[in-house]
Amino acid sequence: MVKKILSKTYIYLVLLLMYLPILVLIAFSFSGVTSIGDTVAEGESWFSTIYWQNLFSDTKIAGEIWTALGNTLIVAVVSAIVATILGTLGAIGAFYSRKKAQKAIEVTTQIPVSNPEIVIALSLVVMFVAIGIEFNFWTLLVGHVILGLPFVYLSVRPKLQQMDPHLYEAALDLGATPRQGLFKVIIPEIMPGILSGFLLSITLSLDDFIVTAFTRGAGLLSGDKTIETLSTLIQSKLKKGPIPPEMRPLTLIIFLAVLAVAIGVTVYKNKQANAVRVRKGRANV
Amino acid sequence: MKFRFQRKYFSIPYIIFMALFIIVPMFFIAFYAFTDSSGAFSFEAARKFFTDPAKFQVILVSLFIAIQTTLICLVIGYPIAYILAKKEYNHNVVLIMLFIMPMWINFVLRTAATRDILFAIGLTGGSHPYAATLIGMVYNYLPFVILPLYSTMLKLDRSQMEAAADLGASPVQVFFKNTIPQSMPGIISAITMTLMPVMSSYVISDALSEGNITLIGNSIYLSFANSQWNNGSFTALLLLILVLLTMWGTNGRKTEEVRGGLW
Image (cartoon, rainbow over the protein chains, first blue to last red):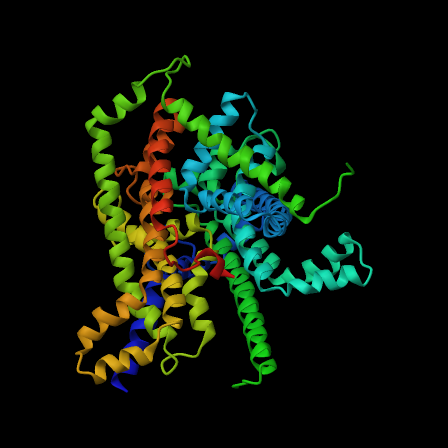
């Protein structure tokens, strides 16, 4: 019993410490003070929605933030779609290749997984500079596809291994074309792997700073100016001092969005796991 | 002979993409590491790297922070993973999710929040650059340590531990002679998730130390910002060789899938 209480206390204490910075930032989104920890003058109210109003009005900083958020989302979604298609096809092809070819593909896939992001980014940039390619949206996109690609491959591969190999052959025997076999048998079977690869690519892209900073040029919502994503925007503000207070309301918005997605995914996965257990006759509710 | 489509051809676009943007760039790094700005063969970048005392300090500080971060994260994270995986203490999936969720919130934003808090309690990059950086690193990498440890703990054979205890091993002995060896795959993954990424990180050290601490990542970033391709490439090449050696060394060893467990 004592052990249990101690364990619970430890868990919640670490959790509290982990979330403290984010929670404080969020709390201060409802205040008018310029920096965290500042006290307000006598008679003034701590509470204020000024930064919420700023974020949703026509201020310069609000424009920067929304542009950066838009860029971030566009790059994340487009790069994740490309990475998912390439990675899924890559995994399917490798699965049906000879052992030697498969091994070579696996090793190549492992390199960007273990390689530090800054080395991936620098090597890409050095190549682009050497052959005289101008930096723009496309170079940035290539960088972000590279971030997610190996992880799509690695998420799809185990699903292929779990698949019943006779399903595809049975479909062909029953008159399906290889194309139908791919779209109606293989892809539905490995869908959970494709989905988690896609989500993983999106998160890796949303979170990225280094590859973005190295490979970006002008374009997207930034027009003729260099593309700013949330990461690069916040970093450039951090260079000059504390981040703008308008970032605090945005933090709450991001936090809630992530929380909603995370809970959704957890509940969905849990339901699936339970469904499998029920099918196997081992339900424990 | 008639061309017949085979399923293995599906991987051709993947192979081309990986070759063009992973393999070929590695050769460019190697080429730039051993040439000078005019493109002629030269050991200038290597000589600069090995004779510059500032570079030596960068490596030392990077190693120090990386090892300390890894150890602190392991010490904090190991009990958490153990408790979360133990059925009698926890059957709450949302709690596990809460420990992993920080991974999904933009890390630059989290670093900014951490810096604001540290600033408010007087731990600024100007006065305590090392401590501020270390705290920032632990904050960022803790979830990456907890996740692989947790996956390992789920597979722990607890009856083995009970048997050891029944046969007279003390709790400390059980822990060091059974629990730790059993959870080794998770520990190895946790180490690979922190050691190299900390040494090669840029934003966290730059923001929290206010530029007072230079890690290997910061030094590569500076070479990039100043277009010193040869120096930057040489440092990157060393990291790359280190990575390839680790890959070769851990080949066949049991490790825990890390990123994949995210979703």
